Amino acid sequence: MEILPPGSMLGEFRLLRLLGRGGMAEVYLAEQTSLHRQVAVKILREDVSENDLSLKRFEREAHAAATLSHPNIVQVYVVGEENGIHFIAQEYVQGLNLKQYIKRKGPPSASIALHLMKQMASALEKSGSAGIVHRDIKPENMLVTRKGVVKVADFGLAQLAAPQDGSVVELTQIGTTMGTPLYMSPEQVQGHKVSHKSDLYSLGVTCYHMLAGRPPFQGETPMSVAIQHLNEQPDSLVERRPDLPPALCHVVHRLMAKKPADRYSDAGELLRDLKEISSALSKNIEPSTLTLSGFDSRPVVPKTSVLEQLRKLPTSWQVAGCVGVFLLFCALGIGVGLLTRPAPPLSTPPTNSSNAPSLPSAIAQIELARLSDFRDNEDYWMAVITGFESDSDAEYRLAAYEQLGLLYLRTLQLEKARQVFQLLLERGVPPLVEESEVRGQAGMIVLASLENQPARVEELLRLFPSEGYEAIDEQLAAYVREAERRLDDEDIETTATPDDRGQLWNQTRIPSNVVSSPRG
Image (tube, one colour):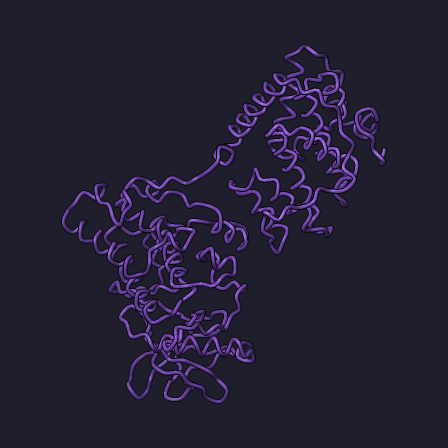
């Protein structure tokens, strides 16, 4: 749709200039000639208006918002259509949206934050009581006037409850994800039915962003962020902002509870807690002593596994940590006297379990498996291996095989580890056959070391390429280096230098008595 020139008329509204564009509409500053006041006119984009569902959603935004008369909700004045152009005229809010506000002024103090949060909660209390779920609460939809008044905008994704019987008017089907991933509730991510508690979750994420200066979850793709909303706990706001009343931080964390039942029952309950904190601050009550609604002021500590904590350390410490874990496994392996011999390679890949959810892409599936809660669950790696068979997904399948093998090494399931790494040696993950072979060799080196077979470790290391350390997972590389160091500790002479190993890699295959290779 072309930008309408200044002076164009839509009914009684004279367009002055373009304010911005969104996914569904263009917004103009306009003058309502009958009342001589400035308004914002939202015009449905031409390419969207041809879609009946989008048109209904646009009209629904207007009618839903028009029923809400509240000082903290953008007021809709007129819903209209002229010459095939669908538009709404609404209150023009001068100021910044909350995202711009945070960027310009930085995270606010407790008193300012409470002032803003109470207004947001009041707006959601009004919409919730009217049976309206916004479904896209985020900083961009929180407009802050020059006087510090918050106005909630854009009910374009609202879900209406009919007041007569409480039934829900569904213009999007269950299973359709709507909203903005940075602020989306877990139930929205999963495509489940939403409620006013979904808005409370998104409000919690918005407030966390406001107070911490960044959203609680970030990632390279929208899907990676959405998965974190499902499974990860945000960093403690108490630790990020020790100057804030701990009770205020707990309010935000309670809003972001994964289960709707663990959040506030409604925005009215939230508003009461916010008012109590605000009142305590005005009376100079020590913030650290303030408790609310059955929860105390102790910091919220993120639930992370030891492996996840190691992952967050600097690289040098990660390697040291991996080596320490490896030494523990070596001691355990020697102590129990592992006497097993190599099992035949897998003729077919293992079958997947139904315990891991199926996601639409390999990158989303493997990002889910890499989360701390699932990293040690073989089902999540198997979901990548068995769920995506195209060549374009080969790198994700190969990474999943490698991580599955590492999981079995960490948990001393050596027969399972042997099957995974032997499969990579014999069959690989087409078309990444050479890359598969490097990982298979690395795994076999670690297994031989765990089984206290130094001669075999030496033989395999002689064939391992010097550049192989850079090609494999950091933890697997640390295990291989530790196997090499164990040889030195036992005074076993290795006859191949790193350069020799690189030459041997190009000339020689793994001996058949170690593992047979149909490509040899």
